[in-house]
Image (cartoon, rainbow, N blue to C red; front, side, top):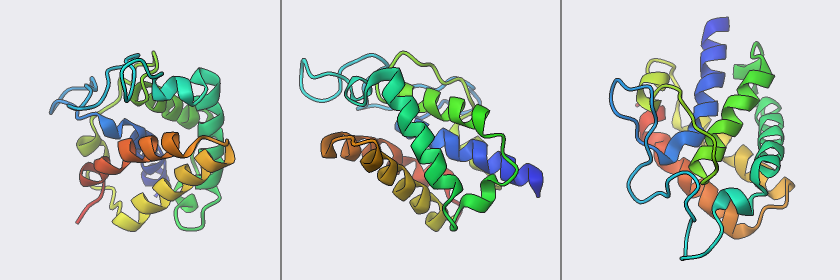
Amino acid sequence: MKRTRIAFALVIASLAVCSMSCKSGSNAAAPASGTPAAGAPAGAAGEASLYARLGGADGVHALVNQAVDNITHDPRIGHFFADTDLEPFKKSFATLIGQVTGGPEKYTGRDMKTTHSGLGIHEADFNALIEDVGRALDQVQAGEKEKAELIALLTPMKKDIIEP
């Protein structure tokens, strides 16, 4: 059971990669079509990347710290993190968020389907995490546009994460 909890914690961290679809069998994440490459501006031409609008590395770390606090204290999913070493989890989560929002970070973890296979993650678990991240965005005073953009990056990964 301890191993499952740790695996689930790492899986949840990798939710941030939701804007990427990884090649089957590859450990390298690649941006999904329609999403900006790392460092590329998001949105209209000349607009700063979501990463920059979230406050760069410092802003992403503040967001991740708040999100992890929300997640670990959430009675719906917090129990999955009881045996998780939170510092490596936060680092991984920040790397993922940084990459998908246009920052310089490079996530090198496994693809989402492989990572989540057999963990029994249900739609309610995924939705709880998305809600906790949304609340964290509010708590760090991210703008509504930034909140919508990050949630839009996370939500499509549901198909690779939840089990029927």
